[in-house]
Image (cartoon, rainbow, N blue to C red; front, side, top):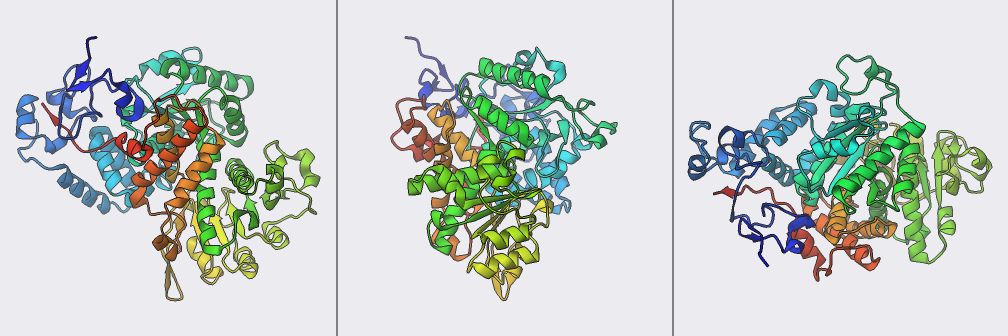
Length: 585
């Protein structure tokens, strides 16, 4: 049989190709010192090459490459290494005092030199993560219309109804592995931002590449525009989306159904679709509707739950006792709150062999009307009903804390400053080490700050938040707040699903991801009060999470990539995208 060879790579051996998607030009399979050809439609050269973000290297083109690709005179004579370019860009970024300016500078870099963008992000992840993702991405979405330069991702609006498959075919890349899709109705804690929510899928997918090692060309950000109920945007002459009230009911469901069908038709069974920042009512419905027919995952419900469960498992090492010994109280009973509560109950059930109905009794939720109790059951939304336990009605959070006496307090309300001094002091009065998770994003919506948690608990709290906080000094001791950021989980989870060729996501995979993350917290981290490992090791962490998720996919018979690799951690690492420049022939 005639073998297909490109760049010295045998393309018939598709099982060996990084990330498990056909790599037509052997670019990812080539080692970093092998020569590759910078193909676009034809071989890119001259001015076209400098305008192509996939292949542009700026001043890092060597003298030979400048001759071979007609770049002489189009660049200044200096030849810089990628490391020197990185050093210069980090220096420039640090000159900006406004986070949004840094965000815009990073987006500009992504549009002109993709590999340098990812090299910068991977090597400086702790410094740049808050720039390309929460909290800065929230402000970017609010101002997306005015900072909009070049379209990123696919915009699918009601105008495209009946033509969504054609729209997907307009996207230049064919081998898509991950789609992050939003309808912009509930962006972080900022509410309905309509079409301007595109900043979220773009930011999430840049993290899939930087932290999880997926190829940038295999990632597709999508915004589904069904209108907006945000009056400010509807009256804004610069708004980039449909100027109409949100479509709901059948019209909405039909558009989503067409999108989901078109995705499977165009990209196959194994493309991962991540739902992002949908409003509560749609988020639960979409997840339950499509989880049996598509490879789907909701980061707000499942990703948040998985990362928080990992923090809870790690916190047990600091406070002692088992998961079943704990009592949990949640402020907020939406997607995040009920998602986390469900996964904790599931892990507790797995550890104790008790039915989940029993383990749920250790978890209490407070919504805008007070403690969720059985006397309220008739008026509750369906996803809150499992959490309605026997108890007299309790109105406020402080009264609920005093009545339930939780060992762990979880904030998923999207409302800032709700963990007051009285609430934290009450937690500290009956817990030696109160565990406090203030998970709402961005920073302005956090239930309390790290400083407040440590100060009001007299330095005894074990604290984690959704957005980053600086270290806090209290009574001569420095506390390092943990960040329960979904970026710990979803890149590794996505990589694990893709390398195993998984066809469905199951809760057991989320539990495996949580346990893998908790296992990465070292004794040295615990000594500093950290319940999450530092982000500087994130690619190693992602590889371990990917291996555990892939192993679970194989165990459950949901993996299609056979035979099963012997060493899944090494296999995961070998599939990761490297942003180091390639040499062109």
